[in-house]
Image (cartoon, rainbow, N blue to C red):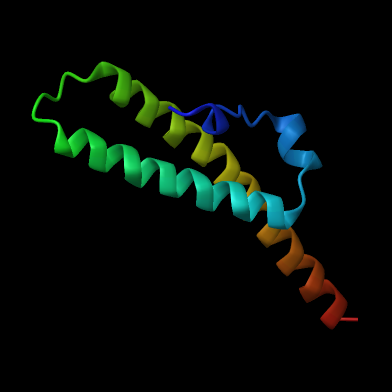
Length: 86
């Protein structure tokens, strides 16, 4: 895993990020997951524990970022709906 992908998205970090930063982080993590999956598939030996662990940590980070993205999306939709009902 490259050094730029080793960001640990804690709850505090996620709440301080803008919506665009959340979207960018989710896109970056999805790309890194696809690249890691391709690298694992290219190796005949599935015992590449380093790549497998890397993939698992990327997927966990993606889940945190995506959860925050979905929360914000629902919040914004509900806020918009309340404004329209006034």
